[in-house]
Amino acid sequence: MAWIGDTADARPASFAGLALACALFVCYPFHAVVREGSLVINLSFGDPVVALIGVLWLLGAVGSHTLPRYAAVAGGLVVAAVGSLIAVSFADPAYFTAAGGALALAKLLGAIAWLIAVYALYSEFGIRVLRAALVVSVAVATLVSVWSLLRTFFLIDGFDRASGPFENPNLFGNYLVLHAFVSLSFLRTWWDERPRREVVALAIVLLSIALVSTGSRGSILGLLGGLAAVAACAVGTRRSVTLTRRSVGAAVGAAFTAVAVPAIFAPSVVGRFVGSRNVDIRLRLWEASLEALLSNPILGIGYGQIHTYLAATIGEYRGTHNVYLLVGGETGFVGLLILFGLIALVARDAIRLGRREGASLFLLGAFVAMLVQGFVTDVDTFRSFWILLGILAAERSHALGGGAIEPGVDWRGEGRVREAARPTRRGGDR
Image 1 (tube, rainbow, N blue to C red):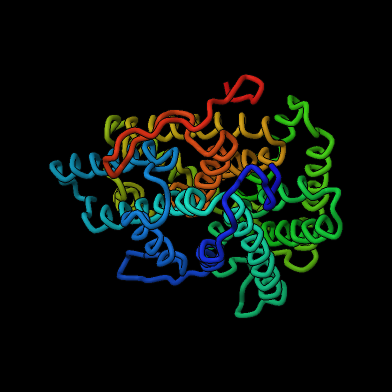
Image 2: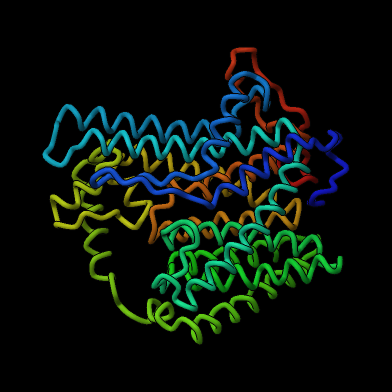
């Protein structure tokens, strides 16, 4: 993956495209929280940019005529969610709230829209614009990390866990995980280029310290799991294995630093990893969510109903803190199978892309990290998850010559789009 200056992309760099892509990634981490009773809506300042890209895409001014890869499976999740709501509305149990279902469905659609927006930018302006915007996004994430660390270590406003502009340490941790792995891909590519290597290495250290300072156990476990996945896949690659191992080694060094600094300046954060707080509650939530799946195995208890269901059954108005039990409990085995199908498809593509281009292994690492985080956090509507899928879809399409591997569906009804370049066995995709 020759980041930024890729001669395989013949399209000239577009200032308008770069401005739009940078606006998307720069605005993303900044949020506003709207509360209406028990309903909480987390709005990103990047959502209006996504809406603008969506309108331009619908009008044909931005993007190709095809939906991005993974969009069809994501649509299956939406169908399963709607089906579960329709089914539960006929039963009308005491816990059912139409408003909760509508809000959860809107959050899911809004998150998936980021997948479409990222891919639309790539298909219109090329891979160089998308990668340049990612460089800007990493710079913003690093600055946000420094700002959040200052607030945490000096307890400004009483903060004892880094949450950045998200007001939620788990969301912030998910955001940092994505950018840590993107930074590692830069480090892998720019290892022999100074001072880029030193600048990226410093960014990785700061991102890692901020990640540990969130106190998000899922994010930390995800980072470690992602690095393990990268190291395991690098063993089977023949190209530039040494550079990949060096990048992983640099990440491990950053991890040690990340643990040492919070231990000195914010011991309350480290206490989350050695204490047993919330463990009993989590186990009760998981047990009740599993019971919801087993008692409603086909379509679940209804999308967006888990909070009220848990409140009615165990007296805890909380989320599941496990995306697999959440999807299974709310949409049954139908939704769970669709989710596992999406995971399998993305993992297959990420592994093949990583074996083809060494730097892309770190996108696989980011994906594995989010899957691991999903065991303790509900990541299905996290924007970072769908942004990553958009990046993977774009990188895969670019690696295969700018077209989809399989014929895509023309959403505007202008026929089938045939593959632009058939990959070979030597390329590693078949």
